[in-house]
Length: 180
Ligand code: IMP
View (tube, rainbow, N blue to C red):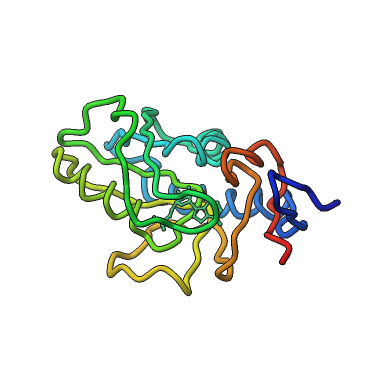
């Protein structure tokens, strides 16, 4: 694996795709354990655009009936969380009385995911689970437990596998870290 350049920054290989897929297998096992054979038909909520790849891979592994919905939010500009969460593209389904499994690419401060969770509960969802491919435990400071976590990473800025730096880098199958 070689370094990549996106806009003005260089990134070096960090997590190979095989390791990411292993983590998704593990997460899928945990989600299946909770929902397989149950009565509930959960809504899998893809947080656009970053979680597209993760959600697709996770969906292929789920062994129970579920629906797919999406939403677009944003709290990131450049390489630092801005703390503001914008609801840019409304939710594509009615969550009233439903179990929702939020699929996120990465949880950093947790501002985004917790605001989204609260919004879903506000809209009447009866159970909201948080499922994230990656998380930064050194930065996450919310009292809410993350239900399903793929890989924990140190506090660094990464791209690839859906994650971007100012919209570039989402297409790479491996994950790269900012080379400082
Ligand atoms: P939070 O609200 O601080 O948890 O930030 C979560 C959102 O910021 C994620 O959905 C990502 O879109 C973005 N984000 C957080 N960390 C990174 C990163 O290392 N690279 C790219 N995007 C990130």
